[in-house]
Amino acid sequence: MTNSHSEHLPVLLNETVAALAVKEDGIYVDGTFGRGGHARVVLSQLSGNGRLLGLDKDPEAIAEGQQLSQQDPRFSIEQCSFANLAEPINSRLWQGKVDGILLDIGVSSPQLDVAERGFSFQKEGPLDMRMDPDSGMSAAQWLAVAEMNDIAVVLKTLGEERFGKRIARAIVETREQSPLTTTTQLAALIEKASPFREKHKHPATRSFQAIRIYINNELEDLKIALDQALNALAVGGRLAVISFHSLEDRIVKRFFREQAKGDDFPVNFPIRADQLNPRVRLIGKAIKAGEAELMMNPRARSAVLRVVEKLA
Ligand SMILES: C[S@@+](CC[C@H](N)C(=O)[O-])C[C@H]1O[C@@H](n2cnc3c(N)ncnc32)[C@H](O)[C@@H]1O
Image 1: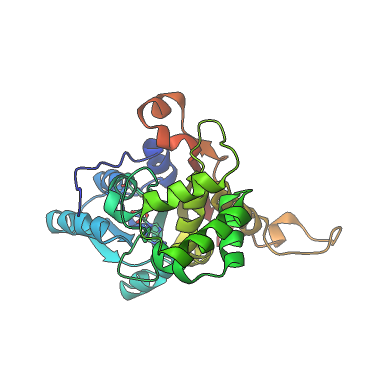
Image 2: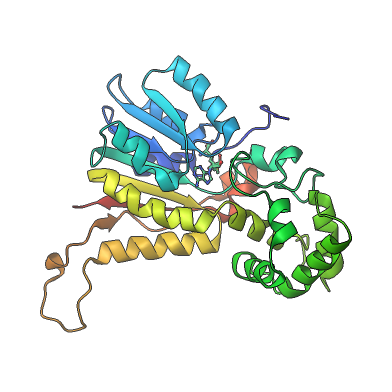
């Protein structure tokens, strides 16, 4: 099933590692190890005293990380959601001591490229889409039982799919005849249910994205992780988040802004800015991939990097 030769080109690699301002004896956490593109560069900047913990939900990412941990004692890896990042951090007694955390969210190229993972509407595979195939419901299992209205809401809110209701109805009508089990079966159904095509976009793009985000609880995990990550950081520690979707980026942007603003007081309340207890300071503006990277890696097109530094 695995295709370990499907590569993942790390996105915004130099920008992200620079933004982490790696200290050579520091403690770092990569919450989305993937194939270790970012992690390996962070490791290359650490001394023998530095530590890097990798996390990922995906068993294939974990297998890759285990190989690295055997070669490099500064590195360790655990299979868990970044929404639970406090656990492996606490078990290492690193709470409040972590110098940098990276979240490069979304799917990796191997997940998209390997048909058996069921993420791609272009490749025939089982309709799965779980980052951890041993946990939770697959897309096929969910689509077999979900209420039509719930499917429509997911397609609309997480995929911004304007034909969400039509597609949801087509899914329910089809499953009454025979179960939906493959990616290409669902893609063909969506294509048929969509009254017209957007330019340069397969009609199933939005629905696949929405179902994937829902099945993997991606937005909720992100919200939980951001708060846990700030708790885990040392004062002066950095949190860098790369998101690939406007819904994710909005969550990151709002969270960072709120934390940088500090306590809420009524407008005109007589208080100085330094009394608002901001939890972080924003490091620069949102960073996007430049032309050179986009030429090499078109998947970087929607990537946005945001960084904060913990103040207190
Ligand atoms: C874009 S890739 C990361 C690539 C990595 N930075 C690299 O250079 O190889 C995203 C990774 O995050 C993992 N992932 C997504 N959501 C996760 C979550 N909630 N918890 C842990 N890992 C998650 C995916 O399984 C995938 O391997």
